[in-house]
Length: 474
Image (cartoon, rainbow, N blue to C red; front, side):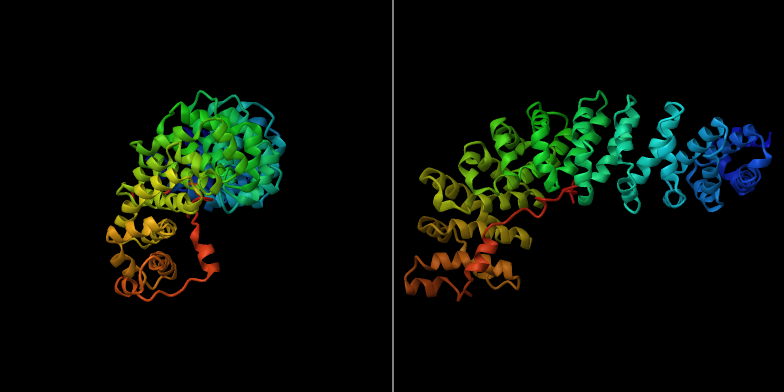
């Protein structure tokens, strides 16, 4: 009777803490659960439920774990009474947010117990087991047990549930696992991409968002890039962009597409499906995170030298200039890396393309040189180094007053900065008379061909990363 009373009283945080202060946790653990052989199934069930009610309060949760409540509850998972097992499982589910509880659960073989009972005795047990497993999957210290312990297929089973909350929790757990490179191949073999594509059709926006997170995280890893092209993931992602979905969906969709755009095969699909121009039009979107991911996409797409003419005809230059004008340095950085990529083969482009890039980019790039941000200065200098390989651009750079800035940057203690500024000055020096060269230019350390080749092309710092959105407002 006391256990029933405690269960009914423990329904508010003040009551829960007061009960815990009076020793209710120890009493329940030791007198009801630990002495299960001398108690009735009903009393064990009510005791487990009372602890479950207490566990809702974070302050009491720690006491339950500290007072060996997890061990006692796990013992009840083998009880002969189904009602007792259900009560114990629900209480363990309430405790699953506690990292110590999760570690104990794994150490005591709880995962194997879940695998044996997870699909039996109704939807409630299914959901409680699923929440425990999802909580373990997002624990970076324990998530390997899910994959290595053969429980990945059970998370897939949860994701295929008809219950939206269970789907959301499973997709959340799978998205966390997808951020680990070591999990990529096993997740692909388990058919996770197709499962997530199915969830992206859900009526629940939360389910769709977690599925997108999972796709975007998987898309970082090399094995997944080709797999997603084969199973039709690109078409689904592209449709999200063309249909101009909500901001959250756009951000995660662009994350995924940016991660996938480093593959030649995926770029070809994106070109055929008409994805590039609609993505470039997002350069003026009101949400900075959307513009940032659009910038990452542009950087990764233009990493391929053979697509410069295509991207110039489909809005890449306008998008680059729009980001370059932003006061947000994260957006500006992506624009500058894109400018480096667009100009790296400037001499191989058609004359009208060369002229368009030169006239459009040189002045905005020079405006970045006085910046206090060394990364921005360096990228701007490398883009100018590419552009300055053409004689007419050397004169433009001189006439726009860049020499003093470049001379200053050439003295930078940063080797990369010194090399980039020095390359521009070297190129300009080739077009000057000896007297003009001495008047305008400093003595510039020579760059070796190997250094120039290594630095000439720049990839985005985030081009192969981005499991979670950076804080571009910082």
